[in-house]
Length: 263
Length: 195
Image 1: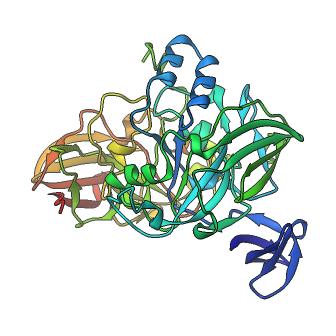
Image 2 (image 1 turned 135 degrees about the vertical axis):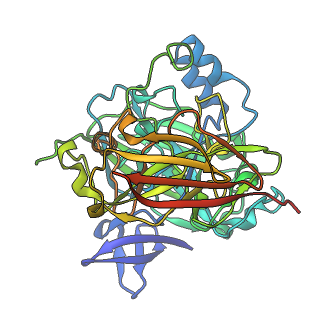
Image 3 (image 1 turned 90 degrees about the vertical axis):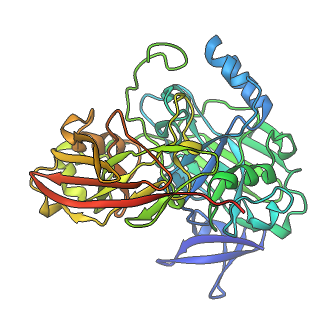
C-alpha cells in the first residue's frame, strides 16, 4: 500500500493510492492527484542524510572542487558520512523550492528515503530490514557555494526551508521486493539529468541501520536519506525537477525565486 | 581556521542538531558509552521559541521567545570539526534539559551567568555576555533560512575550556540572571552496560 498526507476541502487527510494519479481519503472520497495539496507523507523527528554514499557522486563533486577539498571527497569512505536535517526543511510533492539569493550552484539530489518503523538500538544488519516501515522519495537540495568547512555540510546548505521535498508516498516495506535494486532518475524540464541505482550505494540500507543504531537509538518515523548518485546540475527558478525512484514514486518540485518578506 | 580544510573562519552560525534520542530531564542519567572514558560538560542556555519565527528582525527577536532553560550539550571531545559531530554529540542521553523559566521572569536576557559543578565543586563560570552572537542576532541569523516553530529550542553555545566528567560523577549546571538563579540541571554520569 502507498500512503499519503494531503490537504483537501479545508482539512488534512490520510490517503492511499488507488491507481496511478488517483487517491482515496480515509473517509472514502476518491480524488485525482491534482485536486489535493500534497504534504510530506510523514512528520519525522530525526532525519538522517548520507553524504557521498555513491562513489560516482563523490568523484563528480571532487572534480568540481579545489585539489585539497577534492582529496577528502575522494578518500576511501570507511565510515558513512552522516548529517542531520531539521523538519523545517521538508515540503510535499508538487511543492515549490526557493533558490535563495546568492546561490551560485544549487542542485537536486534524488534519494531513496528509508522510514523506520520500530524503535531499536544495536540492530544487526542481518535483521535490520525488520525495523523498516517503508520507503519514500526524497530530493535533498544543496546550495553548494554556501558550504563552510565547519560541521560540513552546514545547515545553511542542507536544512533550509523548502529545500527537502519528500513523497508523494510512503510505500509499505513489504511492497518492495528488493530496495537495493531500484533505479533512480531525475528529469529537469523533461530532460534526463541524473541516473543511478540503489545497488551502487557504498553503505546499503541494512549497513546504515546497523551503523547508526550502534551509537544512537532509532525511533519510529525516523527517516534515513540514503544519498544520491552522479548527475547534479544547477537548477533555476521555473525549472521543474522530477525525482523518481522505481516502484516508490515520482516526486515533482518546481524551483522558484527567493522572495522578500513584506514587513 | 585559515588552513585547509577550513580555509577561513565561519561567516554564519555553526549549527548542529541534538535529536530526540539525546533529550533527558534533570535527574535522569547521562549514559557514558561503552569504551568512552569521559565526556565534555557543555553547559549552555537554551532559548525556547514561543511562536513561528521566519526571517525575523533582530529588534523583534525577544518577542518570539517564550522562555529559557538550562541544557547540557554533552559531547565526546573531538579535534576534527570538518564533519557533523553525530557520533560525538548525538548519543542517547547527551542533551539533558531543565524545566522552562518563562521569559517575563528574566530581567536581562543578555547576561545569564553559567556555573558548572562536578561533584559539587565549581569547575567553570562564564556569561552569555561573551557570546559571539547575542541572542537576538542568533535568532535573526538562523531564521534567515530556517523557520523556528513554537517549542523549538535553540542552544546558544557553550563556553571554552569545558570540564570533563566520568562515570559516577554528579554534574550540576546552574544559570542565574542578575544574581537570581533560574534553576539547576543535575544529572549523574552512568557507564553504559552492554549485554
